[in-house]
Image: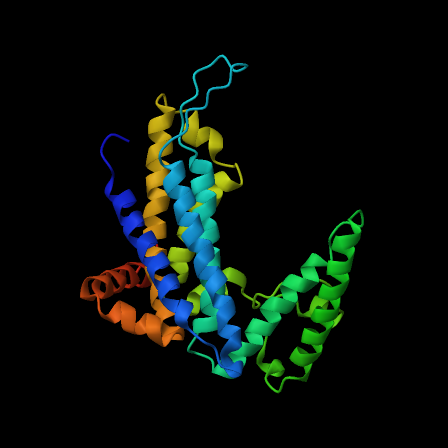
Amino acid sequence: MANIPREIEELKYWTTLLYEILEENKKYIAKKSNDWLIDSEPLVLKVAVHCLSILDLLEGTKPSIPTIKSNINFIDNFSIETIVRSSMETYLVFYYVYLDKLVGKRIRKLRYKIWQASSLAQRQRQAAITTNQLQQLLKKEKSNYLKLRREILNSKSFSKIKLLQMKDFLKKKPFDWKPIEGWRGIAKTSPMTEYFWGDVYNILSSTTHSNAVITNYFQNKNIKDTQERRSLSAVHYLNLIIPLFIEGYSQLFPSVNIYIKKDSNLLLNIKIAKAVVGNYNSIK
């Protein structure tokens, strides 16, 4: 890319801020009652790493492989779109477990336990052909899962939880942590509208699941130009999601909240991003 597009400059800005708030929060010392908040950090770090990968992919790839005669010069928009979709999913996990103010802290902590239990339960599907070390790990994780499951079932708030796969959970089978309405149900109560979530998620999924690959590529003579345009569109969506992570993280940790409030330009940019995703309405 000869001239650096605005979308890339914005992504660099937001990525820098993600790492700044992660660095700022290293001084946080959790009380025992708040140690569950620490597990929100990997979600923010995951997106920060995604951003760095996207910035690298946007540079374009020109491999030199002697056995391949054709000239290869491309931007891997497939990976970029997949990463952005993953970032959107990560935000909804972050919001549902840690930020949803429509429910109390007790429910959010219970959601946290269910999220953890779901991960441990699903890992039990690991193929039987494993190393001894992995078998021991899975055995330990199963024990942790059963302990979490007992805590969840004994919670006074469990009756208020409606899981997508409640039957599997009750039968000790691997289950999904999401509520009955899935991703869309979480998006309904998040800062983004369900329409923004649905339209953008479908756009990003179109090439992830390969059903739009032919129409989007082979009808265009300049394939790299198409790759660049699709990549920048995906980055535009990501630039609207990262501000939600930053604001949400600041709501959990006081030092981060103080840090971002010092930057009036940052606060304005967060407000603009929230207005875009929060007032989006799909034209049907």
